[in-house]
Image (cartoon, rainbow, N blue to C red; front, side, top):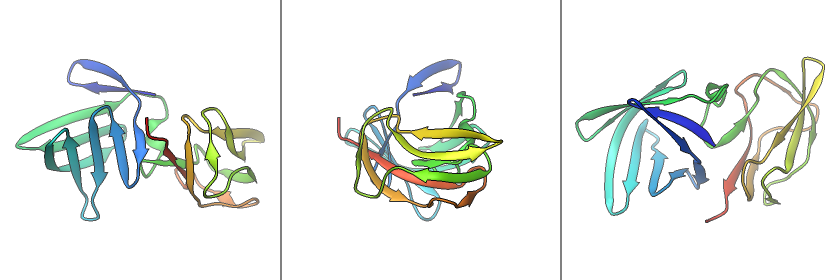
Length: 154
């Protein structure tokens, strides 16, 4: 769950990974290889141009510019939306899942060691592991993609 500021309003959202993109409520968003975004809401579809600067996503859709600010602490640590990223530099102590595994919300996915402490990366939703990018003993940098989980259909 993240809080997003759009204009003067703050919305609590649960973005869910769907294939190559994300679903937020009735809106599906997919980042295209050329950097544009395909946005679908109901039967309406749009091509959007966007850029992310820190925790702010600037989107140009249908002649209007929209400023979306993620106000969750540490939100900018994920380099690529939809993947679980290292919150800080460290080492992978244990990988607890493999591609194809079904996971439940709160389940530990892997264990990182950073700053002489163990940090468990847990699933925020029920889903299926689609990729694991690291192995036991690997060193990772902040923001490096660790694994990907696709949310179950609601």
